[in-house]
Length: 238
Image (cartoon, rainbow, N blue to C red):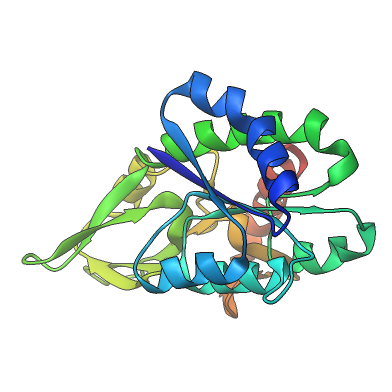
């Protein structure tokens, strides 16, 4: 079940927002809407172990704001998409800093929100099948593709190192076979030593790729032109 939390401190507006996406959600049959009247309620549920796949929140809430809640979700939940609603466009820049999936003015909500929710439900369902098992022989865990930042195997090393949002994992396997497991639209074989998740690329300078989290990878000069072309193609169609 895809869990969609929706937050607004105005009861009437919260009901309107739930109705706005209700048809799409219940037609899909594999999603549920969980309404909240305050960000604090959601924060408390998360502290108790609750997880959500999508969070739709008004930015201007009494008490904890939607942006503050978004920051908490980014820290605590690794696979939750953020959708911000507001009546004021000046909040857009701050919401983008939180990697919000969408920022929607309330006056456009009826036209845009149902389509966005439908798209997110399908993304979440697809991503649940996109994972690999990593860890020790006695303790393996699911690591979703979207949580893998890059994979590295240095020359002469027997192990592949997975750098992920959940920590680092070492596996004894061939880098080429790792690439076969991953989504070819998301991952780029940037060099003989690296496979990069393109969603984490922040910028390229010279022969260095800068990734989210402060990671820097140097790519061979013979590969850098092709790598830049592949990244530009990804950025253009993502």
